[in-house]
Image (cartoon, rainbow, N blue to C red; front, side, top):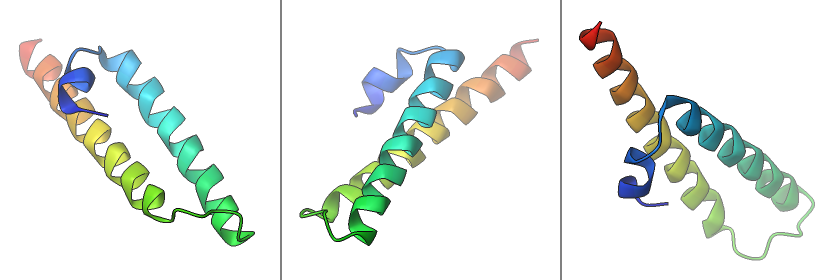
Length: 68
């Protein structure tokens, strides 16, 4: 997911996105453990997507706290 798409979302949307990415990452980890995952690069991709979403979420939360 691109950062421009993430920056368009509000805080609740970002939290939902992080939660869904974490679910997807868990599923991929389980597939890897049972040797059903062919492309292991997707694990790193989802991990980076989670980090990207969490970073933007933290930035928005800081901006909201500074604005109050």
